[in-house]
Length: 229
Length: 304
Ligand SMILES: NC(=O)c1ccc[n+]([C@@H]2O[C@H](COP(=O)([O-])OP(=O)(O)OC[C@H]3O[C@@H](n4cnc5c(N)ncnc54)[C@H](OP(=O)(O)O)[C@@H]3O)[C@@H](O)[C@H]2O)c1
Image (cartoon, rainbow over all chains, first blue to last red):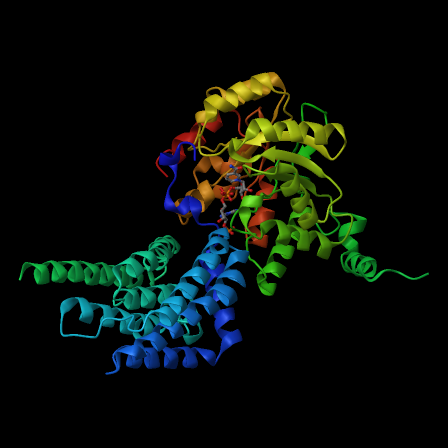
């Protein structure tokens, strides 16, 4: 891009807050009450991720993967791409990410690390819980109607945060590296967009990213410490 | 006689907006907006048009699409003609097309579009034409000089074969003025689009005089700095001299400043509001500021 230094984030925002809010509300109303099902799936996936039998983590990954495929198809491609061409590129990226999670679930016998009382593990679990159950409260807590509430498995932003939490628990480091860019880049883009729109969700989005970075750092430090012993 | 369904729909829309078809200004109150001359042809065009960046990107939202139709209807009724859009503006092109269909044939639109791609220009222009539902474009511009050499050739050929009446290039916020200068000198252009308002006056130095000298019409984008100017001034009292030129709002004062520059042909403010579109068209009738008054306006707005 020429003279890129003269551009600000607001130069890339191509829709108004009002259009974006109505898009989310319309989508929520069209899908209701599947939001409850999505919350149930996340809860079940979490339960499985930390069940005693390590192989159950596979179901958690597969559930998240299918959720991302659904978000890619129904929201990113089906609605958001109509007002934002970035979403038209994000849709295939979410699709590939979702299929990647499913592939890991199919190919790996024990894809997730067991939950331990260690910072990395706890931070990752907190991130998934935060994305699934705290993020949707941002709308009603800031005076918007419940139909503006964003649920993981329905809307891309909390889905990306929840995925980051799960990815932070993936055992294979190569898989972590492969699965991090899509949800991380989307989360950064979403945080910037929300901030430019003046939406309250910008803060939980940024908080979620910080939790992921903390979890990743804790995991790297933990590893080093283990090597040191 | 049997009508094809799409034709019947078009006629239905026409009947619904009969007043608009019979006389675009049938319901209008107030005088005609000032018209300016396109130098390359001598054709006259109202000095305020309608932008569509952000404001018309409403996707499939039926309620907001109807609001846009309302803005377009009020725009034509108030004597407006030029509507500017771009493939960069998401669903805006399709929403303009929806509006033209809803208002029926006879809407006096002057279609100003752009090509914005580093690959297949002709394919993109054809897709744009389909979205508008028009036979040809009045004006095609190369958006932000992206791949401009290749696209200018395409546009020139389209002008020759009658698929575009005028051609031009665009920039905004003072970007690449040197390159623009060179192109204006070296290539045959009908239109140049750039940013100009009482706060962003860089174009006064070279580009506006050059356009005047070369006989190139000038479209002014971002007259209100995408609304930042009007918002910053909201609630502030208008200066006493505003009444002397009949400006009833800051928006009107700004538009009068812009279109009273002799090189400027048309300013294209964007809006989601019927009241604002009427106010904007009304700004360019009646008295206009002279040079001294223009300086006073710029001075007053310098710290907005
Ligand atoms: N490179 C390029 O080719 C390029 C770059 C930039 C822009 N453009 C074109 O130029 C057009 C205009 O620029 P822009 O849309 O960026 O900004 P703009 O026209 O300066 O400002 C638009 C904003 O001004 C507000 N507004 C309009 N009339 C008003 C009034 N009478 N009183 C108070 N507020 C008013 C609108 O809010 P309301 O909805 O509340 O009225 C809207 O948010 C664009 O839409 C686009 O077509 C082209």
